[in-house]
Length: 140
Image 1 (cartoon, rainbow, N blue to C red):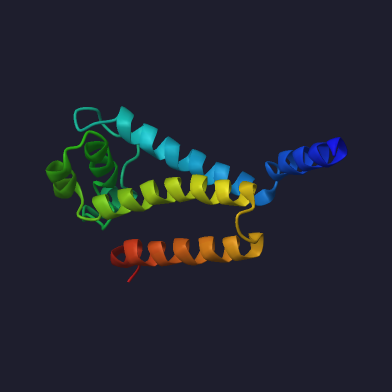
Image 2 (image 1 turned 45 degrees about the horizontal axis):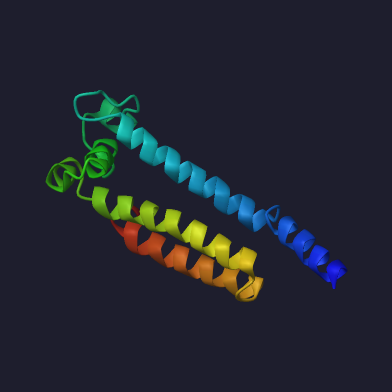
């Protein structure tokens, strides 16, 4: 009985080292860094990342103002966020949903609530679908 408990404990610990969990943690970390960046800089602070397209051509692209839009969303100023970039709110929501999904799918993976293969397929399908819906204005 004690051996079985120890075996389960070891198997559970090794799940944290699985590539799927590590990839989810990396993605979650990147998204959190994006949110932190957005929270640090505001309209009054100049964003350090400039739009290369606008600087070279003088013509705004579809992503111009996206950093400022994210900053305004972090501050709950939705109207101002829309003014900076019409794609800002959908893209911000995509990243927010992805952050939540990374933790949710990791929990499901660790708890082994469904088969790992099915989970990875579901994760891929949900993420690809959300990506296409959200980024359609920038892709097509």
